[in-house]
Structure formats: structure tokens, C-alpha cells
Image: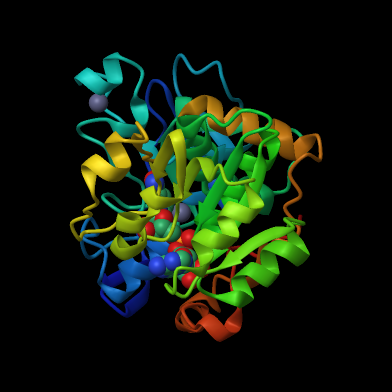
Length: 347
Ligand SMILES: NC(=O)c1ccc[n+]([C@@H]2O[C@H](COP(=O)([O-])OP(=O)(O)OC[C@H]3O[C@@H](n4cnc5c(N)ncnc54)[C@H](O)[C@@H]3O)[C@@H](O)[C@H]2O)c1
Ligand SMILES: [Zn+2]
Ligand SMILES: [Zn+2]
């Protein structure tokens, strides 16, 4: 069967690989229909992602159909359409035993640390499949991106009446915004790129945005928007260590700061005058949990999350290698590019 492999940075190639074997106990054989492309795939392509090894078949945002199931599988059956929770966990380590499957000590993300879904068919643990009867395959492929924002907001746990500041309006920030709004808190979005803020205002209907250029005006604006309280929950989705080092300044007294963006650089901030004085809580947010996938599918089914603004670009299997470098260019305005896996189908 056909697959796309990143042989080394910036070198995709079309390859033929062996058909998967029959599914074993607790496994399902699935057909991949749609695949979402995200920042992780772009940095894997560029060779800037530390966890990425080569050669690798990428693909972790998947809309799939179950083809066959192994012994003991009761949660899915052939014909089911599912989203895939791509975080493979060991079920044995301390984190897994306590239910923190998102940060398993032996964690592997499909398509990053092991081969993913840029192929026709694959075997997956059936417990990682989340069914929907009504979503399209491309909506199912979007669920994982949304799960990152869902988990980040669960970590910060904003309450109705509180203020949430989301810094960074890339795809991850947008997924945080969806769940910040659903929490009933007032949502404010900050970015240094006005085009991204315009998207948030026009397509996601968030009225309050703050453009930052580091001149200190953004703190004044945030003060105005929050009645002088600043943000009860700050979620930094920039991946910039500069922003992450500064983000505490936007936190209200007794506020929470969630780092959902990731930086290899050290992050530093003043302790006594800010973190201690305001008694801030600092939280990391990694991946997502199984119930997040089920909740997001329900929210899209109920029309409470509109996926239409999200999916901006498409390519078929044949066109994906050529399109991939274009999706890296900011001027193409990509939020989420979706690839169709062969053979071409319409849904
Ligand atoms: N927690 C997780 O499990 C998880 C999962 C996937 C991705 N991520 C991380 O989330 C981060 C964001 O991903 P993305 O795909 O949305 O990235 P992106 O680069 O598309 O978006 C980042 C946004 O932040 C803005 N920004 C950058 N520096 C800024 C600053 N100093 N002040 C204000 N705005 C600033 C940019 O203009 C951009 O709009 C990355 O670090 C990525 O690695 C985390
Ligand atoms: Zn992703
Ligand atoms: Zn584990």
C-alpha cells in the first residue's frame, strides 16, 4: 500500500509499504481517510522538532474508518468513523496508573516518535478510537488540534465571570479560544500579528484583542479590558520563551498561568514581586485525555464548535508533497490544511 515518508528533513517520498497484519487482541485495522497537518508536522519537515526521528511516516490528526477488529474489541466495529487519540501510552508507568495518560513516561505520539497515518491502512489500539455517527472525516481529523486547547483550558479551569487571556493566535491558540469561550469566562486574545487577531475577531467572533509589540501598551490595554484586575487565567500558546517569560505580568492576583506552547529555551521571571506576591499558579499542559476527545466530538455534533473557519486548505494524496512547503508560508494564511488519503473519496 502507499505511504508518504519523510526520509530526512525537507525530503518527502512516496513509498510502498507492507499491508498491516490482521488486528490482534484489543486492536483495530483502520483506513485513513483524512489527515490534518499541524505545526509539529511542519517542524518535523523542517528538521527543527527535537522529538522527531527519521525516516518517519508523519500523521497524527486522523479521521478514520474501522475495517476490522481483533479479539475482545467491543468499543468499535467495522464501518465506524472515528477520530484518533494519537498519544500511545504504556498503561504501566506512574503517570498512566494515576490516569495521566497524556504524559505517560514512555509516551509516543503517532507520526512523531513512531510511524503515523500518511498511509492507506494501519493497526491501532481500539481504545484510542473515538466514534462519531455524524461528523465528516475532516471534522474527525480536526478533533486532536481542538483537544490540545481543551486540555489547556481544563488545566486553567476558568469560571464564568473570570477573564481569560490567550497569548498567541496560531492553531493551538485558536483551539484554546474555543474552550475559553465555552467556559463562560470573558476571552481576550493577544498576538503580535494583527492578521491573526483579525481572523480571531472576524471568524471566531472574539471582540477583545490586544496587539503586542513589546512597548508596554498591551498591559495598559489589558488593564482596561479587565477593570484593572488583569487575567484570572493566562494561557500562553506562542511557543516563544520571551512571551512565556513575560506572561506572568498579565496574571491577576491568585491567577493561573498555563503554558501550552513549548520552547526548548529556558523561561525566567521575577519571583518575589510577581509570582509570589500575586500567589500565581503555574501549570504545564501536554497533549490531552480520552474524555476530551469524546467531549469535542459531542460539541461539534451539537453545533457548539463550528469547524468551518478552521479548515482553510486541502490537498489530495498525490498533491500533498508539492503543497507541503507552501503551507509553511505565512502569506498562504493556513490555519488547518487537510490531506485526503487514497483512493480519493468524497464525504
Ligand atoms: N501542549 C501541547 O501538547 C502542544 C501540542 C501541539 C503544539 N504545541 C505548541 O503550541 C505552540 C503553538 O503552536 P501553533 O501551531 O499555534 O504555532 P504558531 O506559530 O502558528 O502560532 C504562534 C502564534 O504566537 C504568536 N506569537 C509569537 N511570539 C509572540 C509574542 N512574543 N507575543 C505575542 N504573540 C506571539 C505568533 O504571531 C503566532 O500567531 C507551539 O509551541 C507548539 O509546539 C503544544
Ligand atoms: Zn497536531
Ligand atoms: Zn505510561
